[in-house]
Image (cartoon, rainbow, N blue to C red):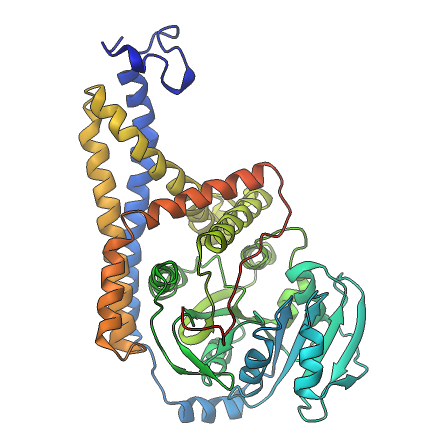
Length: 489
């Protein structure tokens, strides 16, 4: 063997019995590891180039709120804002006040209480003087029974639907069935949106001859910021390191990754926290999927699929200067549950729509977009995490692949850091949300520090999500929140 008896039963297998040395088996495992990590580095590079080209050609924050209002007032499509709510008593009032003060010509707000076990409904009744109302159902998508519908004499465009629990997809479908407007905006009940966000996110629907069927906005974190009267009055920076790294992650995802994917018509995800859809397109495909924890990803993939199968144009776009604010997990347990759930949902979608994978009949969404979901959800976390264990084995066995793996790991960390720095740069140059220079320096520090523990921990959470999918775990893992009034952590 290798001259090192302690390695002869590596991974619990007697490699001598199959005629392979430890070094040889490590070399075999090296090939897929290098391939996957190389592909991830290529994706990083393409994201950087695509984002640079898009942001140079189309800078953010173009057009004042008055300009946007002038255009929308003449051409605006009415929007139904649907906010599924479950145990949201801590944030529902502030969030709803924010939604009702949205700067948009024609909209309604539909809050769907999905069988909350706390005082969500009671808080809404007290805050908005709700009274029972009747409401016509305009679409027939399956959902759990509705118990009561409320309206507000002080806010005529507010509807609250109290229904039996069916989880978020079921609640969203309930809102879609009772929505009256051609556009629907599905938003988390614990989110706040900028006053001009709706004006910005609906712009693509006004200028693309009906080809745009969905548009996603930019999600930012309220952790560390000051909220008053349902409005974000000061953008801060969280003291909690769990939240700090997530601020960077969200910038990277919404300022780089989704910008580049949308540029090449292969955007596969619109965040459930803030997305706008053509109502007829969503109704045609049957609304949000029940029985999956990745309903936002699944709906976008199904919209891509439906458009290509019907041979009709169906663009799905990203609007990074339409900003929605939400609270991120602030501890290990909350972050672990959230990331594991995202991975479980991603795998469910990949399995359900596997016919689209590498299939050019579904355009770039099938040929490239869905395979990239596979790469980023399963392959990259699995193999990069494995590479950290493979590296010492290659070193101990004196295998030549040690240098290649070390270089590939270093390249992945460097490329990931470059993507982070690019996101920070565009955020500060074109949006300037962080007024304190110290916050920018802290973000830059996070771009380097996350490579030493946080990045690897996220891969571990994703492995947990893979096991949850394998074990068909349908339990909804909770994510603890402080609420907008719960401090600046």
